[in-house]
Length: 142
Image (tube, rainbow, N blue to C red; front, side):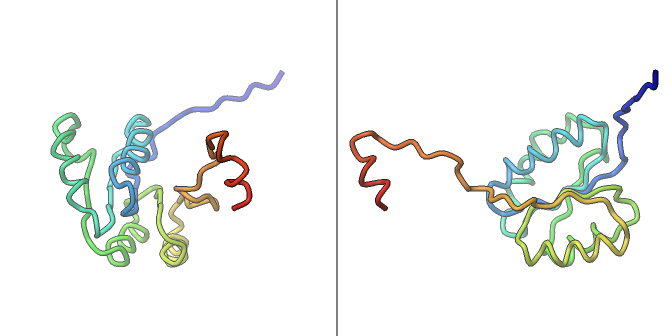
């Protein structure tokens, strides 16, 4: 009878790059599992929305030991490239545009950094539409 075991172990330092749309939500989606798994995080928000993440860190920063949650502010190409090529980053979670993703994949591949990318989904694509019965026929014609 063979036995199989699966151990959940922290990876160490993980990088997280989040987009400009829904910055706090995307940060929460990435931070919670990484921190719960025992990792340290380097979070890079979009250059268009740095303030929300700064406020988030002010709110939750004192709940974590120093150095567990870090933020890198800066332009996408420069700051993202630094994360993608850093030997201190064990894994990266990236959410962003397709052109940025292509460049990011190339940089991450050079350093063989493990990364999660968009799997073809659209972040604002609904799976259902709830339509009032009285306008259903007109809705379906459109």
